Length: 198
Ligand SMILES: Nc1nc2c(c(=O)[nH]1)N(C=O)[C@@H](CNc1ccc(C(=O)N[C@@H](CCC(=O)O)C(=O)O)cc1)CN2
Ligand SMILES: Nc1ncnc2c1ncn2[C@@H]1O[C@H](COP(=O)(O)OP(=O)(O)OP(=O)(O)O)[C@@H](O)[C@H]1O
Image (cartoon, rainbow, N blue to C red; front, side, top):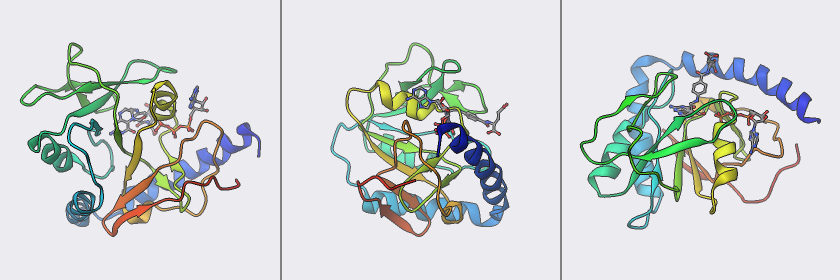
């Protein structure tokens, strides 16, 4: 499939994924997020000092605020992403304990401009959908992939999602960096390294 065709297919998948994620019942969301957080801390080993990029949840994304808070309490350095502009990589700003967060666009909150920057060792990724190969479907801005292309070292990529966000097959473009693992309310699933055929 050409990249143009893949983009077309992804647009249709995004529409379906938005609907599906929004349909997950509000009364179940909290418990699912709690279960996923527990699976993360049981199943994902972090070395002391490893920088973890979290996200400030928006729309119907799985809420990872408790994960971020627990990481910070444990002394793990945590950063949050900021969109500087279209076609630009994300800026990852360290959230220092007690520092206020500011509106950073799209409904997200992030540390202030003067916060230190960091290259993450682990990225907790928001997503619209994922498939069994670890391909991730985002909102289509390409921000995470563009950011990964600028980093010296490829971080471990850990998606957080509700189990119902799994899709049959998400076509993968050359720039799409697959997830290493997905955390849902059902547990942590690690993906094989080998690239699938799209
Ligand atoms: N929680 C969270 N933080 C994040 C991301 C994310 O996906 N989730 N991002 C990951 O890149 C960056 C923000 N990028 C975003 C890009 C698009 C939309 C969004 O809601 N898009 C709408 C259309 C918006 C419009 O046209 O006004 C959509 O998809 O329907 C949100 C965040 C950085 N921070
Ligand atoms: N490494 C990159 N360098 C330049 N452009 C890129 C790169 N990665 C992605 N893009 C651009 O971003 C567009 C959207 O990419 P993609 O469909 O993978 O977004 P997404 O992963 O769904 O979004 P997001 O990462 O913001 O959640 C692509 O069509 C491409 O033009």
